[in-house]
Amino acid sequence: MSREPHIPDLRTYAFHEKAAEILRTQPERIAEVHAVLNHWLGMPGTQAEGWAGKWQQLIDGLSTLEIADLICKQGEEMDFYRKSSPFACLISETERLEIIRRFQYNH
Image (tube, rainbow, N blue to C red; front, side, top):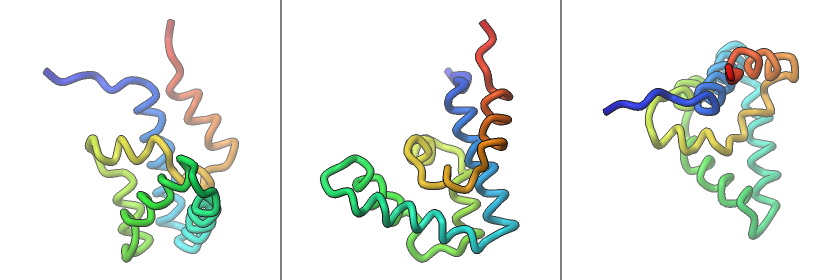
């Protein structure tokens, strides 16, 4: 039985699609992601440090285009990684709000 994706998952995926688009057109911005990961690594004993290590292992040795493809990969593993992602730094506030509006709950 397949389940319908819920709005937070759809929204998180849309954020990463936008981040991937940015990386494909401006690959130099991967430096911003690495800066976030380095910042997180400087927070010993926190969840941020743990996530930084996981993300670094995942993207180590990949080109920027490979990273862009990876963050949009479907599946449970990437759904898990997207829950705490350093790629949010690439998205402007305007882009973020547009995605949030697109995936609002309809009560």
